[in-house]
Length: 363
Ligand code: NAP
Ligand code: ZN
Ligand code: ZN
Image 1 (cartoon, rainbow, N blue to C red):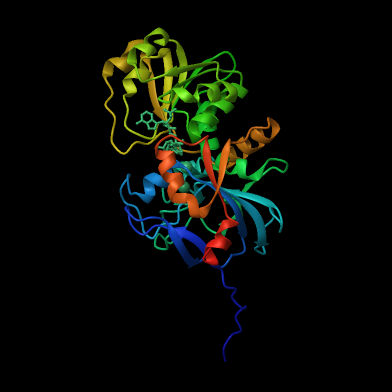
Image 2 (image 1 turned 60 degrees about the vertical axis):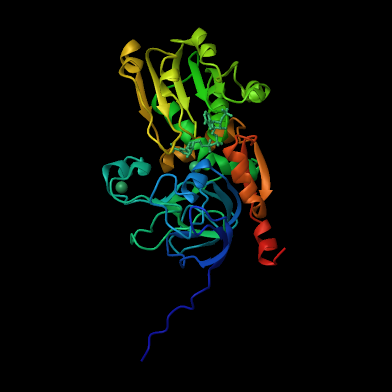
């Protein structure tokens, strides 16, 4: 006799994937896993385009897994919950960031720094599930199944497309500010005014810091001021940095390409801290004198833990902070990648997932 199994639903999911470092993203259909007792099924409404999507789609960091469905700035609505789920109900807004699970037992996981899991961080895409075999597929897709403990609550009342980038760009620039206790009265430098950079400006200025933006794009000055910066320095000529040498308490470097870190380290005051969040494909050279002078610290930071990400979302809701976005249909993703690489985005592309239906119709 055969035991009767519950009827399995089909979780056929539409998305866009790339199949090699040099391919374009194209329509791709795949199956999501059956939601388990602790899972929520989320219908994705918007997904931001992070520069990390581009780095990984093009294998600029090495080890990319194909086919790859990028996307880790995900917002949508819960359409189904597992039997043991307590934190979400059908119809709730939900967010998913850069990871969807972790080992849960290592010291870092237990302390809420799951992003630094000592065992296996299940990244939202370009990684593997807990079985360390099944590939994960990200947010350029119609739906996703995530454990409720790794799903964020999206506060109501914020424009949803503008919330999506908070799940990566927001938390990545919020977390170091918290760790290094950056706040009122401090002088903060933000290097690179892109997706992460513009969130860094909004967050640091909302906390009372005096913000200076360092940018290669002179045309971004009015935006930088409107975002909350007090000063703007174009970095094309190194001499233009000299007047502010030794003046900064804290600098966050969001640049996505190789550049000279020493120029910015020299802007730090005594015991000032520069934190790298941008990830260029090649290592940087740091002169010892850039660090030993003024006893400076060069640090790094990767996204943030689940609890901290929720805190950031709640902070943004309370302070009415979201990302400045350009919403695009998924059919324009290749163009959006090219424009992001050129720094031609004000300040985050966000894909409207309704456009996937048009892709399925062949339109
Ligand atoms: P983005 O929107 O493309 O912004 C990067 C900015 O860097 C550009 O807008 C540009 O600003 C500046 N830039 C680009 N090329 C440059 C060059 N050759 N020299 C000097 N400046 C240059 O990218 P994003 O999404 O904000 O991501 C930024 C970086 O952070 C990426 O490497 C990404 O992978 C990484 N990231 C890290 C984490 C983490 O957890 N640490 C999380 C997310 C992303 P200007 O026009 O103002 O010069
Ligand atoms: Zn990202
Ligand atoms: Zn862990």
